[in-house]
Length: 417
Image (cartoon, rainbow, N blue to C red; front, side):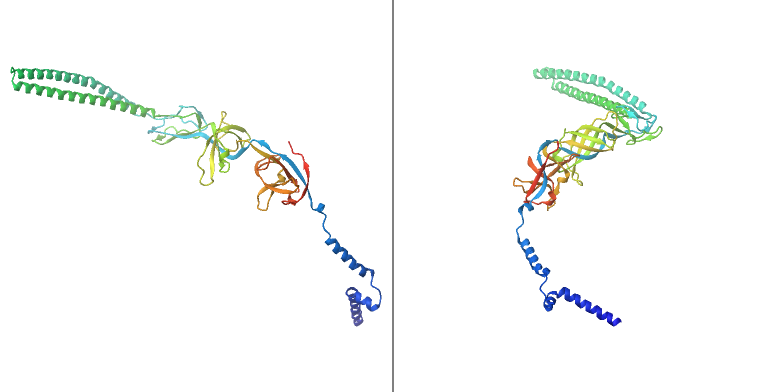
């Protein structure tokens, strides 16, 4: 039974092979006419060949796209920066002399005005030193009249000696006086002249004593003034003032004070946009709290940061209620000169084979053309782009299916706003 089944299977396989692969020879061997399918096969192959050889319809090669007939508009350009707030002034007020603090401390956060007392030091013996220097000044001033009187007396003696010398010389010439008398008179005159020099020296010394005493008085008074440490400007205390009883030395900190009105906004502009920022330009900033403030650019660095290659920009903003704190993050928008741009959907942007950002446009010959663009501003309505002609047809749908010089059939949509 098993052998019969195997033989039957072999016969069936041979029959199927002959029927499928050797059908034409089998039909010829049987003497029958070719089948309709066999006759139709060459005909179908010929038709397919004719179809492939037939030229394509040019109308089927045109790509249908949606385009936007855009007109350039002038918009206010702006430079957007991220930065931080910074106190207009911040200084640590230090002691200029030594002494013990005898004043109650002021707590941090307190507001102080210009020249308000921050720390008061023990005067010690400074008042006595001042009194001593004033006494020396009085004594030095008393020496001046004495020196002036001595100088006047010396001048009188010189005049008297000159008269005696002239008289002795006249008498000696006429033979009425001896040569010895003339020599004696001249010696007296020289002594009187030396007396004038001594009197001038005494007067100069007295005047120098006055100046020295005045300097000592000024130093003593300045030393007493240093005992009271005051606020150099109005602001907020960032630290407590020195504690009562603490010993201060020259350079010891009394307190740190900051000025927040006006406050500075500090940002860093890249070198590609530095020429769009000018001192005096209007700027707006949004603080992390959501408040929007307005100010003007007061400083633009001429030197770039060595690491980031950016330029420091400072903007002064009024802060009368001190709501803006030092060190907050802000987003700054600096106004720049206006420029022409096109408002297009963000989806219309594409890249060329070299990775350049741009749009595909419709030429006068209804072919596609890639044009590079520069993004100016991103808004909720779309993106503003530049570097395009004033009038241009921008493909907004289908730009990814065409390349340069491909024929297109545009359907135009209306521009917004």
